[in-house]
Image 1 (cartoon, rainbow, N blue to C red):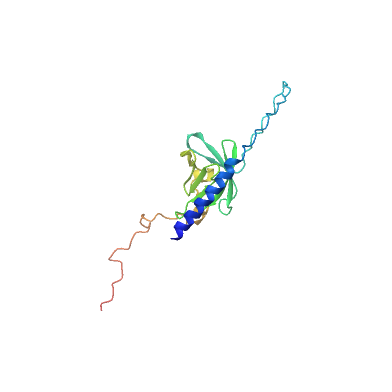
Image 2: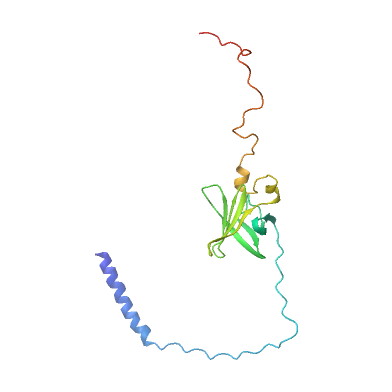
Length: 178
């Protein structure tokens, strides 16, 4: 019953305001302003200075390079330099343990796991860069991320037997009888 009354009120309101809106004259368009032609000179406008990449260099497959500025272990917003442009990507929380930085305006999505980083463009639906690693990661280190910092260093693989041989049964002391 409440929904019926609400719908009737909304309908009555739209009918009363629609008549007022139609009765008004449309706004007149402003007269186009005359454009003053700029004097042409031999000198062209100075090109915008290229952004000098700052931050740590990440080398990716297919020759792509991106630079990441900021401390990935603690900063909530990092700066990514991709193809000469700077993007500020805020951190997103994940349940998988990967570090994810996403900017909805530009569509850039950076996912960093301990072995590599991947850069996506969510707006275009494509992967821009894959297998991105720092020089330290290429030498065997882990990613400079929260996930990489939390990962315990690998001292001995779990599936390899210990180096010391087991004692023979003849050398082992006899177990007491009960």
